[in-house]
Image: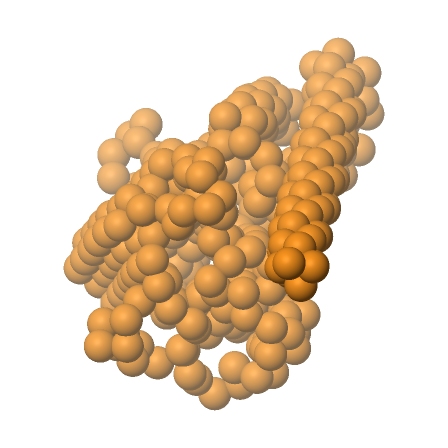
Length: 336
């Protein structure tokens, strides 16, 4: 009887120990989640404050330009510096897409576009004869009087995107491809190194980037393949359908995208939002100088968190998101 009582006592004690261990684990989990939320909140607050301060500086400079009090001989330098400031703000937004809400990114981008429009209007007013010589040999196509002039260098458009207003007269805001159908497009290290690259409104295209962009934005792509070398900071994908992306970066954010395959090398994590039917697999691109480009981009080739995908539309931590999955071996293809 005493032995039975002893067994019962040990069983109760064991249950209490396990219950306490579980309670402590749950408490630690809540603490870590709270700390992570605090860090994310602090990052968002920093973005809002820093962006607000930078925007106010731009506004003050635009007001100073509008006043007409700046010596005309100083205007080219003044315009160039303002264009550079706007380019830096755009880079700041791109680097912050990892943790800032899509709404805030969109509103900030709209503000930048408004600044760029005002800067262009002031340019036309204060320096009407000022012309900018693009690097390389540019071909200008004038369709008709009053129509837009399109500039291209070796097939790479360096003028306005249909969805973005760029101040390219005074600062190189990036390169890329826009409005293409059924083409094979390339960008080399000499063109993209440390630059912001944009791919917008492409359909049935294959794009190969053998270099190290600073950022990569892909918007409104349909049935396209994008094969990119290591990107130094962030990649942002928005509104893409039936595409294949082979990309490497620090941060990857995918928004409003469906039925896409992503072969990724990401050193932090991937965030998806308003997405469906995404499949992930490890980065498998191969080309000459790839190892060197990983070094130039500052990415660790041995650290790949391709399975760390956070779905902003899925709140059940103990159940996997239905909006993405790891690719099966039989589904993978070699695109290198």
